[in-house]
Length: 224
Length: 189
Length: 210
Image (cartoon, rainbow over all chains, first blue to last red; front, side):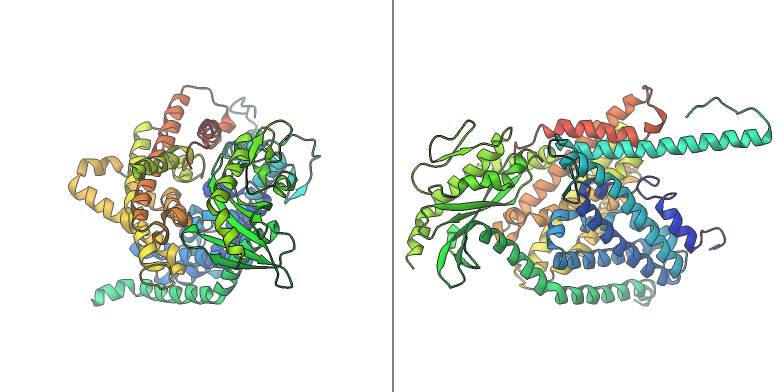
């Protein structure tokens, strides 16, 4: 395992938020994203649960990384993740029962959330405790960011509220569809497209800069 | 056998430790979880019977469970009757409040619904639900009307959410027909 | 006769009214990444349905007859529920894979990479969890062994509904190959927007069955 090529702890943290954002860049974990973003409160609760599970599982896998047998490792990841998810679910039921009820089956569904297994395999199984921890926090923050943006859009347009507080005048005819499945798909589709659009612009600009530096004409007339 | 152990000792160890950890957390939090479940139902019941402070479940056998509500001095002030039925988009769960003689409705709360947000979901709003308070639980069943209510058993429908409104009223009517007489009898006790 | 109608309504509700993709958002992750081709969508859908049926039956049995406090065993082991569910699913996938590889090699070739992939498919775990959540409909305490029949019907119907959903999306995406999709929307963007329109169409089924 060559640790030189892998990002260090700081790198893992920063990249998790934007560059390697689990939703917008890696396109993982879409199911809960669409389901719990009808309100900002459920989005925050889900983000908290994911943070707890991701940190727990990354640390646990990192602790055991030298002992992992190749063909059993996925099972071990699954077991550890299931344990942390169960604990998170119990804690939610005990201390935030209304939110737990609102989240429904989506908390246990964190077990099959590709983000968590992905991080266990890509980071925790290869790097030490500290980078695994920062990676978990970074990814969770990225996840939370994506969820918050989506939930804010849906709640404000769909109910005129943000975290239950009225932010739009009640004369505003709320776009009920935003709170329903079609609204979720539309919002995420548009947000993802915006991110891709930004990326394409960045790439085109970088290409133009490179060509300008070399003194040659830009290779194509691609306008973002 | 030893090969099996060599390959899977980690799995076995992690399983045992996990089992213990989860069991521990569960045992620690279980009382709280049970209490939350109770409170949730109690809150719904207390919301529909004015003046109530305590709720005691009463098992009516195959008629299901209802709740007797008492005030701070222990006086019997009303019934809380859970009811459910299909709504426009999913199950609607209600609690119907009745006076001790089961002759008048004291109110309804919607405990669970997945109706159209902004339209059918308005069945949870106080303004609409307050229509039920004071309606007779005997005689003519409740009826939803789109225009202005002209009879005492009329309930005004939510604009553009007639189906959800009708669902709530139908659930209430069915439950009252089913259980009202038994409750009136029980009230004597 | 009544039971048959009830089961039919349950199936229609699971497949169409509360479609797993368009109402519960389950099974999207694996789909977005996999492929745009209709035959692959059908293959994946069938594999998912098959595993759902087996896993659904086993998880119902374990949950209701062993784990819950209301079970014949009377112990409260409900806290290991999720761990048991996911391992039953993983096991079911392994079993199905082994069986197909031995007895239907051409089918195994067709399923290809899907089988190991579907362990993490949210739809399967989702179906088991939804059966567990609706205890007044499915639990042994409420409806006895009928609960298992209902659970299996629910799971199969949900799987078929999932298949319908992804096949619909695959057919549309295949046609999109010939359309001029703006660059930022290519891939995930346009797929999600198509899903939005399909979800709107499926809203029309709302209220038809519980």
